[in-house]
Image 1 (cartoon, helix red, strand yellow):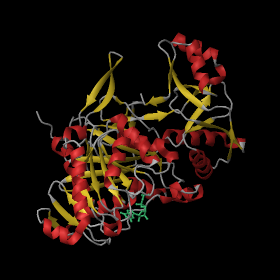
Image 2 (cartoon, rainbow, N blue to C red; image 1 turned 120 degrees about the horizontal axis):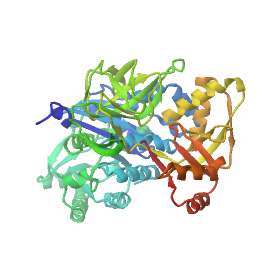
Image 3 (tube, rainbow, N blue to C red; image 1 turned 90 degrees about the vertical axis):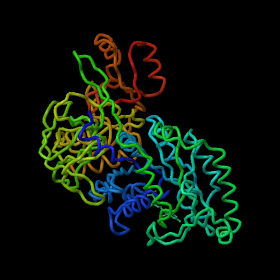
Image 4 (cartoon, rainbow, N blue to C red; image 1 turned 180 degrees about the vertical axis):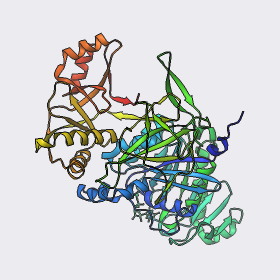
Length: 536
Ligand code: GDP
């Protein structure tokens, strides 16, 4: 029997846009919004530029967090589809955040600067997509500049992605002699003109069959484009939609975001090629045993997962927005939802969807949509929300930190506030907080240095806690599990000073060198050491 929600979920597309800073992600995002009709004027999307420059700039931006909250999730309608776009932070120090965003999407749009090819930050993001077999659409940007040969770029993308590229459009020339793109599907060339005012339909198209006309206009560039296009298509496999959906093939588009060129092709690809929401894995307890269950998007019961928590703009109000990716069912205002971890009812003060720059009260939302619940607490990263069913989604990763600092509070009278602040920042995933079992100062664990600075700043401004961060001997951590409580106890007794609990109360072993783990593992072969914790 078909579900009443099937049609709604089928027309949804939820994707993340990924790139190395400066490749043109913000520009492309804006053009996608513009051409879908979600925004009327260019310049409405504020890039979070500062986040990759000095910390002080980041702090400034952080003060205006409203902007980044609103622009990190954007919904648009296009061709009877609902398209949810999730931005990913550019700075590598916030990569953990990005990984979690990637768990909330069904596909990714990768923007590459045609002069620079695949850059470091993109490489890390690709790894995560590969692990999850997330389908990737590739956009090679800045063809209006002097860039690399398209064959060369394809070759690099293939190597980096470890999957074949299938060109969907092909550039004629580049830089000053950029003539346009050939659409391999329609067998027509769209002629490039620079400028940011032009609408996609304003570009002239000429059928490839008009060879004489094209040759007369674009001369040798046209012939050499045909030649390289032939080489590229000869070397790449046939387009295979299933292979793309399985993360084994990427369609490649060329264009120039700032000139509105080649953008419509990408927007259409998101609708035509990218997947609608897919089943998500959860566990439920059956007779007290965890059982894996696939939740289908069109299932009638509501279920969603918190993949991001962000403190609200107004520091005087301790409310936070929990970003929830809906996995199944339908959300409607007034609905009673439960947080599975605590079995408590969630009482949001507001529930919004993110319409490009605006937030709007949700009227209804389905699988694939991102909904923001504003609450005063009670939600953590990785929490599962349902309207009754008892289940927990898996797969939201926390990485073992590689840098540690000890927190020293300057005014001991603020201890309570510090604890509250650290707990909340830990729940947000801004930093990982470890409380040593043996007592003593709290430890902060981060993947990137900037995280420490942000936390110090936020503790000061939002919780009025002036802290000093001091280096400590730890350089890593492993989450610990054992098959029996007795084994775990034995291990804890052997390393009383090395044990700590994180914000989710999960036990961790703190290490001072990689040998530590190896030695401990040799001594306790039955203990499991995890470099990655999934919300369980
Ligand atoms: P982000 O850091 O990836 O979000 O990159 P932005 O969208 O902010 O773009 C970085 C810079 O590249 C800006 O100065 C843009 O104007 C410029 N840019 C973006 N797309 C193009 C393009 O197609 N051609 C050229 N020449 N410049 C572009």
